Image (tube, rainbow, N blue to C red; front, top):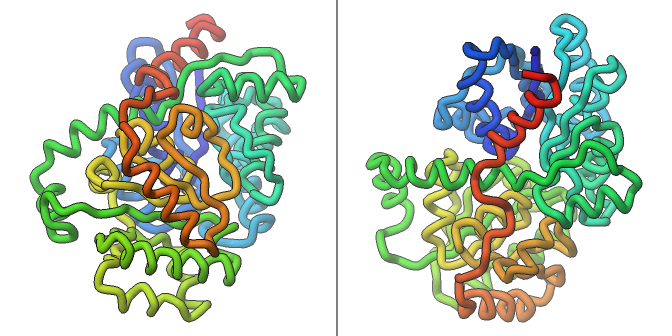
Length: 373
């Protein structure tokens, strides 16, 4: 059996790592052949290269070096590159994950070549078509042959859209990755020492991540977020650690508002971190402020309160269990402060809704059963 895996971003590398590890474990005994196609949608070493190294994953057999571009141009380049590889390799199935341009390109190329498509993290919906991710995940679901939603909510989303076959609720592989790797990270002395250079031990801090297009590509909204962060740092008199995404850095410079953050003594801007370092920063934060879907999940798993600066979320489970609050009115800092006050006072005994940490192995076993291995 030959399996292709298409990935291209930090979250995909992390969330597919349990599946890659399982295939690596089984390949010699069962004669499974698999290969990785890396689109390089994330092209910074801080956003992809370091994650393969830290997670001890094999280097991709193919690297398309697509890099940054407009939505259409980037997806088109990926589609062309993935198709060429698949014509040469002819796998029986191709695994894609989530909602990126890499996901859609991998699914489209495979479907057109009559190769079975496996969609991990299927069924997530924000019901906001202004988000390119929403378009990617909907289209991918409707051309996939095997769908692995993480929760019953995600499964119901698929059924409502008329997708009813080969749906398997398996939990989310991010639980596998988070639980496995936080233990490794906490045992790495050099990681802890590196973090202590950023934030003194036992000192409280908020962790901030902002990268989504709806927040960064709108000058007024991004400026409102920056003003809100400045007021939050003053109101709570707390340090805010900000690993800055390349897109966000570019836009802050373009809009001439980066200096507002750099001149504030409570805001510590750092380069994007490796996975282990970021997990520890997440676990030990007093609160996380984000617009990332994956960070919402990791915060929930690690029992760290979270507020999300978005109008909606494709992770409604985090809202239901109480680990997360949505704040869309970023121009009104009182709304943000109210949400922060609620979350930092909330008991952290919420239940993780994303599974027990065995999702990767379960997915591989289901596929092997389907193909009689």
